[in-house]
Amino acid sequence: MLHVDSIFAATSAVPAAVLAATPAGPPALAAGGEATPPPFTVGAVLTETRLDSWLALGLVLAAGLYLYGVHRLRLRGDRWPISRTVFFLGPGLGGIALVTVSGLHAYDTALLSVHMVQHMVLSMVAPIFLALGAPMTLALRTLPVGARKRLLAIVHSRVARVYSFPLVAFAIFVVNPFALYFSDLYRFTLEHAWAHELVHAHFIMTGCVFFWPLLGLDPLPGRWPYPARALLMLLSVPFHTVLGLTIMQSSTLFGGDWYPSLNLSWSDPWDDQVVAGGILWVGGEFVSVTMLAVLVVQWIKQSEREARRVDRELDRQEARDRAAGTPA
Image (cartoon, rainbow, N blue to C red):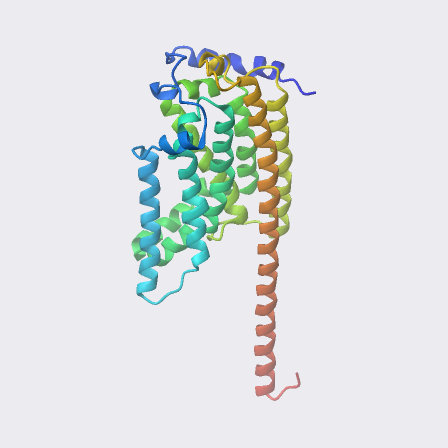
């Protein structure tokens, strides 16, 4: 059985010294001073929906810009695959809204299991479908020349090249959860709403940095060939398994005494932590294996396109040879 007490002891000292000077909110309140939520039910999730957050505004703005771009393409007679729009607006932006704007947000500092659902969706599910929506390609096809050049300059900048390099993105994607959960940083995010919101944004950005070069359809510099991408995707699977099992089998509560101090009569922090670890373990493996299958399908389609391109080139060469009077 795995034990993480030594990990907690080793990693909590420095963050504790850094964060000790910041006053914590009352333990009986969730992040941001909100009262602890009622028992977790479907009805409670529906009634706790929040539409006044900065994230909700950002989601509406992103959806509006995407749809406007699609509309401009159609006005000039260009096609845009409906599947890309569905991916971007549905599981992409919709997935983010589901776990941050819906009533689930009321439980993300009260139940570790709900936080892990957010973790999975924000860092693995939503970024994948945002990438499959190809928003950068849409922007390049609809923006004016000047704005298009500026966007390309950003995409091909040194910073973008470093962070989108698959090994760098892989390291960020793998290390970040361990750095968050095995230190006092996680407790800090529970006590301060602004830090909690930053973690949500960080999950999204981390997932995009990792999955965009692997599965995305947008033109990115330094994209690896499909076999290397598949290998990197496969290597990411064990880390979620290790993290999930470690959380499940830990003899220390994540977040310290935060969850017990909420005094939720309808939830036991220890049982909820086991559920949280299971969500990360099973969910991480399911998403990783599914996306590996998607990557293989993309690989096959790319190979078929390349084969057709070669066939067309051979046909043109044969036609030129015949026209020149030389034997094929």
